[in-house]
Image (tube, rainbow, N blue to C red; front, side, top):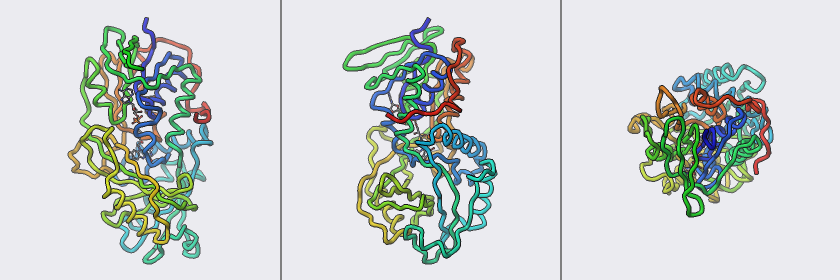
Length: 391
Ligand SMILES: Cc1cc2nc3c(=O)[nH]c(=O)nc-3n(C[C@H](O)[C@H](O)[C@H](O)COP(=O)(O)OP(=O)(O)OC[C@H]3O[C@@H](n4cnc5c(N)ncnc54)[C@H](O)[C@@H]3O)c2cc1C
């Protein structure tokens, strides 16, 4: 008999989600985190709980439908952490996505979202343009408005960890996972904490290291097949002055990429960029070019907006490798799961995925591990269990 049914490495949103789902399923769980809850990508996202309107351009219908279903669940179980906000898409003469295309995309988005009241979109009459946070109206041809979700990603992750703990999971912070070796029906897991090395046995193991997952997998035995992925950095710029009418989905003047301008903690957030990253994840910093690019994008659309620099930070997307041939936006956000032995799965490594889909991802991970997990009476269903306040 193992010390734990499941050991999870990494307390980003995916590790938190797996720990919560496993504890809800009645299994004993240990969650190991080296830096701090949501210290990695899960506090550096665009903080949107959304289907991803732009993923329709690459026909990711399944992903969009699943994400919109997850949005609906999160709005119900975490109304204190996830809320619907107005999204505006301004269309200028030079905007590459034309009104007909946006109308078609928003109609499909509404369809995939279940056609409820939250799924409706509209075209704003000209008389309302002046009320849009000083949006530049020179050459403006149309403004679309629809609704989508916004959250505080770090707070959401902390709330999911707390929910896991309420269900009986143990969390160890400051615990650097070192290695794990499969020994028959269990893994022997090693980590360092406070300068000493500790170990336990676990019936199953989940590696949820975000941009560190490939490195974690290399230190597990057997290593198993690894998906071909690459890291793409995305920077956000935070400036003074808060926009108040919701989120704007604009095109960067330089390369026509979609960029969000969002209200955030009394300030305004602009993001993101795309930059290939080949160094260690912890070495990532926003570059001066990225800050300039985002600043210019804000200035183009909100020329009167104060642009006093507050902060900038970057996170790493884990995307299928294609040598940068396709833009990061064009590549799938679908999560990839790598297992140790397809005939007898006891370890799953999580690559990529979305904040929005963390709960669905956790279900997929547990489906892969279920044959190896002992029968236990479930304690809760994460689709209906209300999340606590974030600690
Ligand atoms: C710029 C950007 C914008 C995004 N915007 C959105 C968005 O708006 N909406 C959306 O749905 N998704 C978005 N995403 C995707 C989403 O943020 C990520 O999919 C998600 O946060 C990844 O979470 P994770 O748990 O896999 O990884 P992480 O959050 O990076 O967590 C990994 C954890 O593992 C820990 N760890 C690593 N090595 C060890 C070790 N040896 N021992 C112990 N712990 C270890 C790290 O400290 C870290 O806490 C965005 C991503 C980026 C990069």
